[in-house]
Length: 329
Ligand SMILES: Cc1cc2nc3c(=O)[nH]c(=O)nc-3n(C[C@H](O)[C@H](O)[C@H](O)COP(=O)(O)O)c2cc1C
Image 1 (cartoon, rainbow, N blue to C red):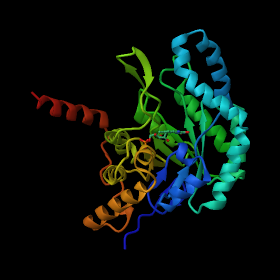
Image 2: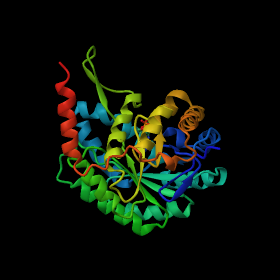
Image 3: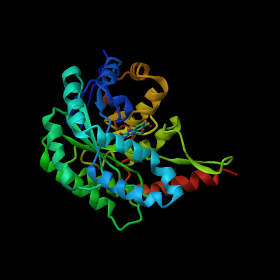
Image 4: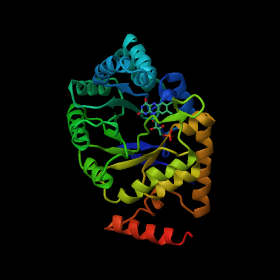
């Protein structure tokens, strides 16, 4: 009998599949569909830190002076404006309460934030509404050319939110750090119980016919899984909290690879937009078949088997690079 259960961020999950924060996790009806198809936990659609709204006000003023910027931001401005009108906070807390009434699986709230200002007290209300954990989506964008110290901002946000709540706090981060491994390890040594690698920012495209900057479709590609896999593999033996993989996991195979390098769980979003919630069952079946073929009964029997324990991974990576590319004529 194969047991797919795992533990992630202090939560016991019946299998390693968490549905990541997105439009599919924004209503109880949709959440129930995800649960009935096998999801082990859900991260609700993010609520935004108020500061972002102020910042967006500023961006509106600035953007309206500049046609190029306004085109880029107009969509998100409309989106956030609509949110404001709907009394976001009340409906978000209601979503948590309703989800907790209707679902048996853990419900993780998600807060999209850029600072540790007063909004962090809201975390307590999220806990009181019944959320099993909070995921912070720290939305500090690499294009930011101000003097903000990203790493310090992460540490400040974690510290402030952790003081407010006793439920597990996790964080989804970007890979855009100069010393990524060092940052991952440092952040893991805080009060965080889980770290999600990685966030995926909006990526624009260019239309060579209309000569305009256009939105690229929002979904990841199946080969994107190598990004979290590489960094989880490099760090899973060196961190002090659990790791979850996010970005590009579209198959049982890419899920298994994340577990092999040391992830405790994975988050799926694009694969479910592209294939429907039933696709969770296909992936779980693939995981079970693979475990069966390898004679594994528990995830812990192979979790982290391929994580690097190299003390000097940068030197190792450089030598691999030399070896590999010198063979290609
Ligand atoms: C339509 C859509 C909406 C999303 N909304 C959110 C959100 O509200 N909060 C968040 O933290 N991430 C959001 N994300 C990002 C996903 O949670 C995830 O990190 C990203 O899509 C990478 O995972 P994937 O390759 O499985 O799609 C969204 C992604 C998509 C495609």
